[in-house]
Length: 196
Image (cartoon, rainbow, N blue to C red; front, side):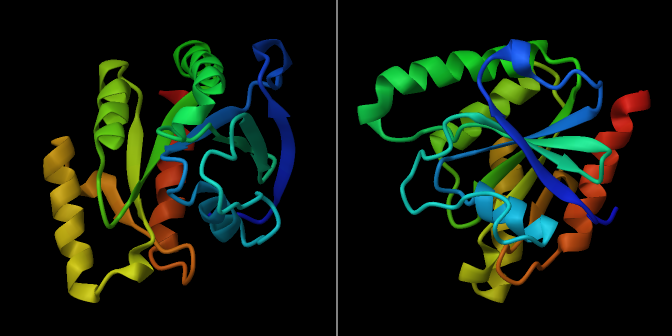
């Protein structure tokens, strides 16, 4: 797959306002500081497509991006963000749960995990996906911050911790786009689950 066109479709929190055209949707899940916005901008080759912030928890809505006029990439609220946002966290969790569990257009979830550490929140999120039989792939973000020989090691640690195949774990750098081809191929696999 090549991403030739990427448009911001809208910020949506009410399920009645979700797109109604039946296109496949692939969602992004990850801790609030894992770099989801940078990931979106990187794979879409548009530094201004998704807003990035140094403040954890800024993405507290479902943000829809239309990719190649073919499917939606849905950026979900980051999990594990600041305790002083508990009321908002509860509200956003409810909306996210409803989206994941009820949205028939959702064909898979890309879970971003910081390559330098895997947290309890990451493990719980992955268990959530497994328990609901949701197809998923893991993207290890920020690998440019690791030494070359540590990347393979971190990939093995994450796959063993989550008890999944290493084939489901793709190291990626939003900075230098290392492994971009593997990331885009993974999107292809999930989008094409439409017919299965």
